[in-house]
Image 1: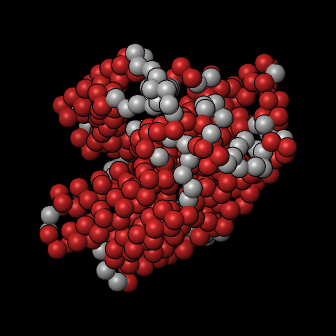
Image 2 (image 1 turned 90 degrees about the vertical axis):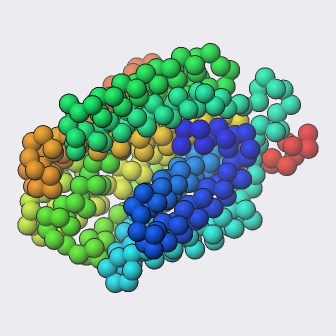
Length: 432
């Protein structure tokens, strides 16, 4: 995800979006066909290719929205509706994969994905307008570039660091596998930071970020790491401990889609009323804390409507308030030709923090009780409370700093209707 935004900046985000859908479609087709090969390695490679395609979609889609729409009510609406895709897609994925796995044959969930991706790639190529990319910039000094050595160091470092955390629950932190990958990962990340400081077009634009933008990324990382824990362990809780069927488990999560739309519209309403991104992000962290507490204290055998239902009601408000708020903050902080980098940075923080959070929670589970037992799952969920609480604390400190510095009023000026509801004519810009 980290270099995908820069690739989109160079070659065009629409082209990269179409290519991402094609990658997911082909890899999903092969993942379904892996049932005939009998090779788990082949299946794992196909799943990895699915992840690459999925990662490329996020920054390219967000960059398209950030480039086409100017700051204002319309932009906040489309970013809010984009965030709604997360809870809606989660529920649709749960329902259809449960149908295929429980009632038909599991490879069909991959083949169905192939069909959908072919349709989406065709629609994206025909409907989505192209935005400005590096080919429109005449000055070579301003044209975005991608540096292979920097990209390799950054991506490899992040992968190895994350691998150490997610493998530690299974092998233990004392294993050479975890120690070696952790040390090499940290060394590569340090090399990446050093090399990025010496180039004109870094993948990680630290020098261009304000302290509010950097703080928003920190808050987002802490909040979504807690969310990654809850979204994984709620399914484990229902299937492994309660013994629910896949279809029943999917049915219980339907409120996520319904209230996800309500949360997206609430985000648009708050932004329209002059709430700043920092204020909305702080409000979202409150829901992360509530959501974590609801799941961590859930009794094993309890009526669905007493507590679990409310967990699925609160979760979308955490997701659909935090993601667009952080994306808008970063989108407004960089110029139009850097929208891909801003989008990939937010997406990387969101999804990478979920993986790291699961590593922390898995370590807590493995070192306190047996895996997939109630005490172990509770220990993992208590880490979610700690991470979400930390996000709320940092968000409150940042918001207080913004209010004391008098910058909290800036968000209102960006929402003026006179400059917001028009879409720039990129065709005229190219002709000029």
